[in-house]
Image (cartoon, rainbow, N blue to C red; front, side, top):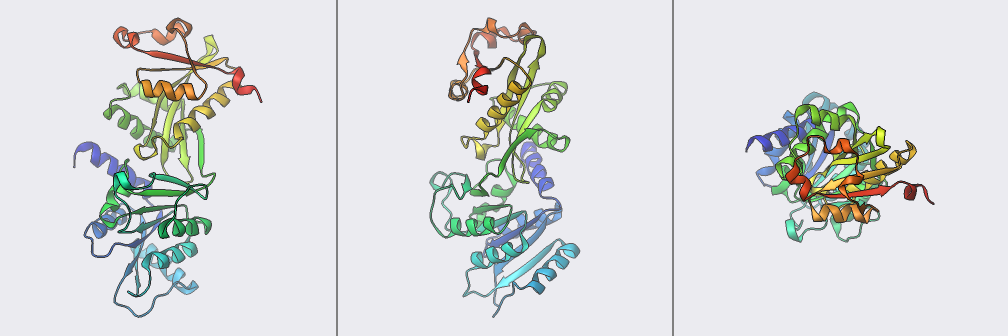
Length: 332
């Protein structure tokens, strides 16, 4: 595991600290106990519902209280389920009573990578059939924060990496875009680092990165981690602003998160009385993304002169500049 992977893992473990997860299944896969141990050692509270050689199981009120007491003492509790019962169904029933931060269904039948459904699905709008999606619906309707479905061998990749290895299900209206809070800065900084490592964001000094965070917006799914980030840099002398450093967690790429962030920025900029918002990119895909949101290509000279202070001439030669006139945002 290299330095960036260790940092990524630490970020997710910190994210789960003092939060409860119900994990269902796993069988004899050795990946599961090691991942659960890492979660518990990182401060998460883990209820592991698993198949065992028992004749009965409990999910009554007294048992729910016992689970809480065990989690307080030990940070984890094992819930055995008889072999003749469906461990994923039992775990979903129990999660509906506990209403944890997250339910993780370890389903060996989960398709792998290229054959799997979209890595992020909002229910009940999301399409799809099968036992796992029905259990996810049931859990979300009961008040569970979010549901992850993956193969047992992929649990660590699903929970502790940006890319994921399964499907994350959340409730409708679950995504909010807001200006960053101080406690969001670390997660946003990780997203910026990811974008730099993947080559689509420019490296910045610590001071420049801090400035982005101050002007930053984040997309958050419920109480979960940030799924996307961008900064809205104001140029008050020109009454315009720039969308800068737009990036999303890999598993949410193409899921509409970037559009949610930019639309919120456009609305806020219009409320502030700005006349336009612009964006700059060397990527044809990114330029297409902004055009789809109503941006149009403009000459470099239209942008504020301050934008070009110290700007790399070679990069400027291949830069596409686009602008959104905010009058269009205010029209019904």
